[in-house]
Length: 294
Image 1 (cartoon, rainbow, N blue to C red):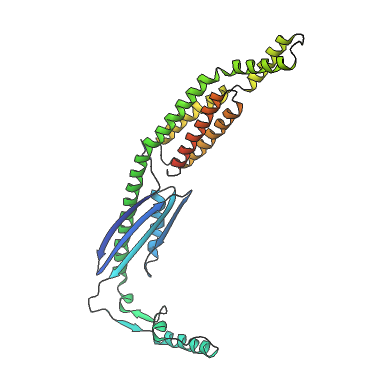
Image 2 (image 1 turned 90 degrees about the vertical axis):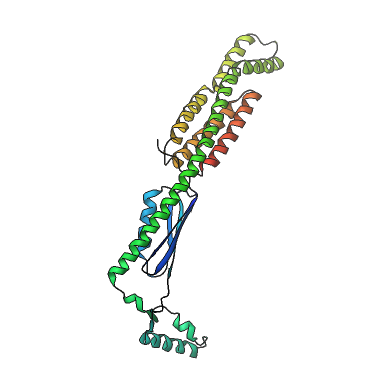
């Protein structure tokens, strides 16, 4: 049986290689569709594509955020160089803007511009760079695996909650079925009193009362709605055993609410109306829980 999964969770994994240390945090919250976002240090853009593909392979819904934090351990051997040609171009442009009234450039501001400072390790061996990215990619996968475990754990906690609500709906449908049998008699009595108050001496009154009451009882018949609600209960139990089931459950609850609304509108007794209103409240509570299901 496929495990039900939630949409909120957190996962973390750490790694180290070739003088680098890094950590990856993956977290997710509820969302109608799947959206995977990645944030990482400059120069590791290829990891964004991997993170999004890995997220799409594991999840069907939710807003998933993956963050990579990396640091190069200083060993005293690293050196930096200034790209003087690029710095001069920036400086010329900045001076032109200053003559037009802009704030004059500062040294630290110029050095912070992209490409002005070249780290010596940017020219490192391509194979070593690929190995480093592969190690980081593995850590991304591990963090997403940890997030999947957390979401599955949430799903396991949600499953009995959902089934409890479905059981309450089933019990209310049963109560409505028992109460619905009293509808015809209630309609006939109400219609008889009203007609006899308005026209107590009209000829053939009893026959007309019977026919009109029968017509009203037919319009107020809720057996079709109760049959559909019973079928929806069976469908809900089947969907809880599937994954991902969130979208299907969300649509099914719209059908639940449609039948409950019709039940209330057709009700001819206070008791049946009360059951219908309670049914709508439980359906809404179940809908709120389903928003957490993948």
